[in-house]
Amino acid sequence: MSSGSFNPFKMAQQQFDEVAAKLGLDEATCDLLRNPDREYHFGIPIRMDDGSYKVFRGFRIQHSDARGPCKGGIRFHPQETVDTVKALAMWMTWKTAVVDIPLGGGKGGVICDPHTLSMREQEAICRGWVRQVVKNVGPVQDIPAPDVLTTGQHMLWMLDEYEKITGMKSPGFITGKPAGFGGSLGRTEATGYGVVYTIREALKELNIDIKKTTASVQGFGNVARYTIELFNQYGGTVTAVSCWNHGEQKAYTYKKSNGIKLDELLSITNKFGEINVEKAKALGYEILAGNDWISQEVDILIPAALENQVNAETALNIKSSVRVIAEGANGPTTPEADEIIKSKNIWMIPDFLANAGGVTCSYFEQVQNNMNYYWDKDEVLTKLDRKMTEAYHAVSELSRSKNVYMREAAYLISIQRVAEACKYRGWV
Ligand code: NAD
Image 1 (cartoon, protein in one colour):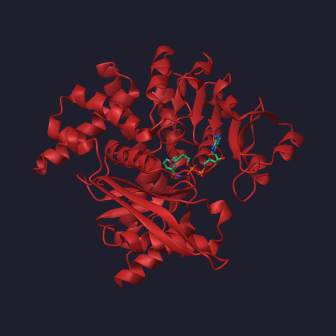
Image 2 (cartoon, rainbow, N blue to C red):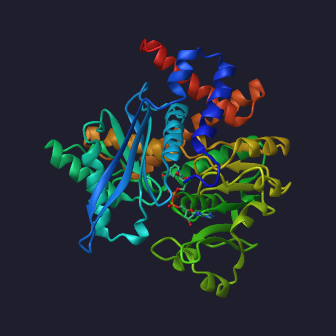
Image 3 (cartoon, rainbow, N blue to C red):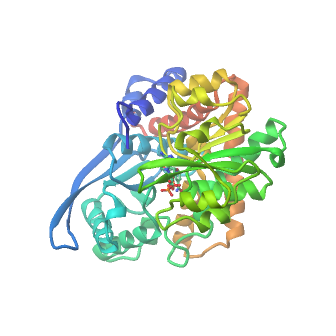
């Protein structure tokens, strides 16, 4: 979903190149890691409900399996591009490495708009996607998961197709399954809660009482909602949330200075996750432009929607009150914006660390699938908190000891771990 001339893959490569140079990686390792191991591009022919046939473009990118099977979500989006999927696959490699789980990085996508497709058509796309890559994915090769506009239902259709073709029960083929169908308790909350665990640790280090903090969030989907939920439980106040309005094809920011109420906003949200503007107004919310989430006078900014949102232009609007940015979304900040954020002395919790809770819990889901024994929610969330807290402190300590930006510290740790795996395997 790249917009204009912004190319997320080029940005991911630029970020990699800078860190690779600092680590002094040799040319072959750089060549290997700045590109995906494997790319699959395919057409998915579907018979539509009206009897016509349509072909949807699908992708699976396996960036690196040096540390374990590839792992990453499948996105359904009308503006999906292969370069977005390639960037996200690379970020998955760094993400699984930074939280130190034995998995690599992959990502998939289909160019389609689920808003305009019936459930039957979506099911056909899911099954078609699996048929195209069945030989190259699986519990010990590459494990998909839900991502933007895909859900546990999509995962179950994909699992069912995979099991039909292989003739085996393999719940570990895919994660993000609903609880009771091989899913893990806590997976729905995991990414958002993980964001908050890292914010909690950052605030402790900065000597800021979380109960006295305010935050502004971009997005009102899975990540944003559970971030808001746990942040509120810790006593923090969210004063603004921005959300996409499909009908009007633009975003709005919903503001309440004394704190938005999650349940209230959810009660006026439709099945596509859009907040009803008129009802929000009636409930006393101030309705601002979509981009205004970033210019709020708050302590914490949480971009939890899309990539390329904090860029050279929008970052200039960040207020001096902001102390922490926690990236719930993947790739929300451009390298130019990073420079502005550094100059404003804002503590950055980079995407592949902040939002690693989802993949960490997906890993727990696989572990439970392999044992065929399921943990209770407290056990899952306690293990998740421990993993996220450890990963946060490893990055933060390196950032302080080497006096480098947090994103750079996270990259240094991840790329070093993956490069070592390639070296010890004898690949380069
Ligand atoms: P989602 O589809 O549930 O929600 C996306 C949200 O973004 C929606 O609320 C939508 O209204 C909002 N949005 C879209 N365009 C917007 C705009 N221009 N302005 C404001 N809001 C806008 O998706 P999600 O699962 O919450 O994922 C959000 C981000 O987090 C993505 O970058 C995704 O890759 C990343 N992520 C998700 C997970 C996960 O477990 N779900 C894990 C790691 C990273």
